[in-house]
Length: 145
Image 1 (tube, helix red, strand yellow):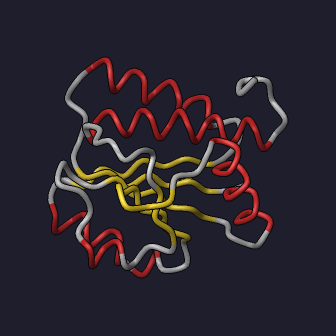
Image 2 (cartoon, rainbow, N blue to C red; image 1 turned 60 degrees about the vertical axis):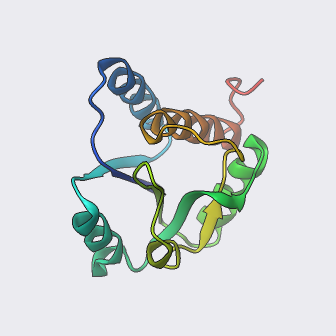
């Protein structure tokens, strides 16, 4: 089963955002093993991303200059990675000022959801929803329709 890891800078303080994330994380359990990592500061964020345990993971940085995939393209990207032998994907959300360039360089792909700027706390919910949508598309489910 595919392992999906989400590395986020900071923790969510708002209950409504935590509840939304928890719902999508619960739904993702049907499709993958999901783990959320919350880094408390820049040093722990960089250390986690560069740790030897993550070296074999396929890393996707969320950043404004990344490629904008449709939901179907995102699902297809995940499918190609999984069928191509990738067993673990890390999605990276930086702090309010983004992901430092040296950490983006550690990632194999840069993904943008929009040229607009979103609060990084809300981006976590948006990403989890799109990840759930992608997994549902991969399995032929009806959520996307």
